[in-house]
Amino acid sequence: MIYRPVNGAGDGSEVQAALAQWTGQRTVPNVFVGGNHIGGCDETMAKHKEGKLVPLLTEAGAVSSSA
Image (cartoon, rainbow, N blue to C red; front, side):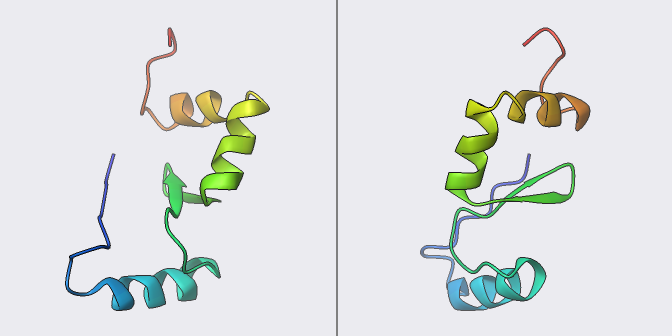
């Protein structure tokens, strides 16, 4: 898991500009699972509520299949 804080990083605006270019979204959080952009907080929470987040995390090797 990679966590990159934007606040206080000194280059927050550059990070947000790059995120906008890569994902069309400059707001944070900007969540990637297994190298794939899944969205921000709302999209991530929606996937969790739909039961789709843990399978994505499991497939990416971020959690064990017993979780």
